[in-house]
Image (cartoon, rainbow over the protein chains, first blue to last red):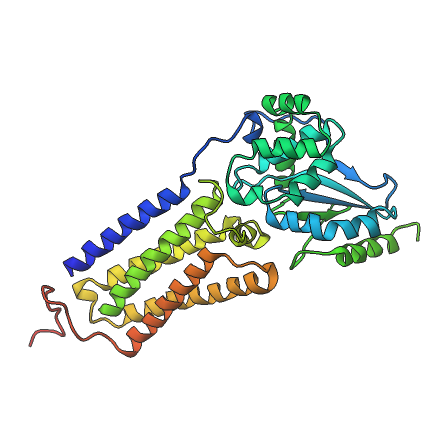
Length: 223
Length: 156
């Protein structure tokens, strides 16, 4: 019996050390853009939008740049949604940041997109971040990669570097995350249609959003 | 008794698997160590990774801890001949196993991603469930040397 407890204790120690080693990761998060800001302020910004302002349906997507499902949605589903719903004037698509705590660089990536957005290159940078999503799997500091992606997105790197170093949009991103909390966003991506939360049992596709848009348009007062 | 010892070992292993996933969900450490497939990230960031406001892994920690505590309690000399400990272990293991079946279903058919850590936990809880059933079917009769023999009944 005593031997049993000795072995059990030894196993607990080994497993404890293993978990500690797994949780240890090298390298600090880069710059002020990587972490939550000490204070949060509302700058009035409510997300970058795609589509016409007169579109009868507004989809709000809370996304996390490091989330693989968000990347899959952006690269697989979004092109069809743009073609069939956004470009036809039926849907306006709004992007809100919801960086999850489990992701080391998602806030940093959101900040990179916002700094690109300051130069009118938000959507180009978003495409770059999602299309080259391998960065999210390596766990390595993506600072240099993001600069390259920014360059490919047409961003002026001097202004980008200054924006990232200052953490200029850290409060905006945190405000968006807190807004997500307040509307009970519990994962990413989470979607709202004209303010109503959409519950999907799987990753939605263009057909799902087409059905939702059809339903809203059919029940709108103009019809 | 061997069954209960095996359950204690397995529960300890499961506890640390769940603990790692829980701490990761709380933001400790960097990206989850899961290979290049990204399956764990997909599962951990899905809407099914949170239940009643807590990461699902937290319930794993609680469940494995409960199994471990009951298994250790059942190994006390006085508890060794008592069958109700085996029943309790089967009950706990069954709850854990059924939860795992549901979560594995979600991974395979809803989230379409497999997390290796979750598979590891599923293997462990399945093993615990099988061993706990065996402990009911074949209750221990042998006591290890060095352990005082418990009383079998009132003294004559």
